[in-house]
Amino acid sequence: MKRYFLLSFLLCPAFFAHAQQADTLVKFQKGGKYGFNNAAGQEIIPAQYDVVGEFVHGVAPVKVKGKQGFVFANGKHTAYKYDTAWVKGKFLFVGRKQKQGLLDSTGKEWVAPVYDEVKPERDGYARIRVGEVYGMVNSKGKVILKPAYDMISGVSHHSVLIYNGDKCGRADLQTGKVIGAQYDKVGPFKDGLAWVQQENKFGFINDKGDVVIPIMYDRVGNFNEGVAPIGVSGKFGFIDMANKTVIAPKYDNAIIFQNGRGLVKLNGRVGFVDKEGKETWTDSPPEEVKK
Image (cartoon, rainbow, N blue to C red):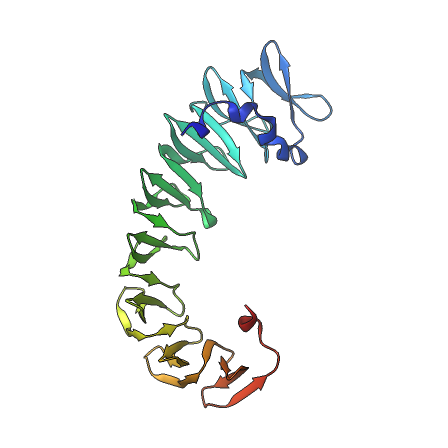
């Protein structure tokens, strides 16, 4: 945990150098204390701190009476009660007794400093670690997933993949519900269904975790417009959400169904097929194929 200790962050000019292009307040010293002036040399924040860092995104870490916190460009400040305080990106990290936490953009404690590691994620979530296991906290600081997982993926559409051993599930971060934790892999929910993999076969589950399309296919893709690509014995076609064949598996690959047509490959050609089986071939592969 030594990388989080004390004022090496506050005193290292290189750590804050990138912020100077966006923040104009500069520190000054008076009577052994530090404060901040604006670019014209006018005092904005009185000299009252024992140690200060540079301003980053309108906030600076400071130390007073042995404790640390943050001061904002308007002079408002957080509580000075932490052992460490530092800015990383746009996030305000704090530490106490070698544990990490986060403050929000107003200086309010978002994640209490009780975790071994805290990592902000997209959409206002944060990943937390206790020992060797991980959990998730939402934007209000509520623990949505208790630290119990070997690994957690990045946030996507308010959900994450969770891993324990060689098994995988998907967790809804708005409800905290974990679905399909017994599978080898779990895909994203599209049209209300997510593909799952178990022993090299694929099927689909609903948002309750029920298997609604048997785990019987060699390969599958995501549902779109109520249709998903599937692979059987090296050939590919499309099924609907009731597991009925929409386009028989006869292609070398079936990629996605959109705008009423399935994107397919056959004998080196790329084209489209509609639900009636009408095919249209093109010499210019769409972006989905190029990727």
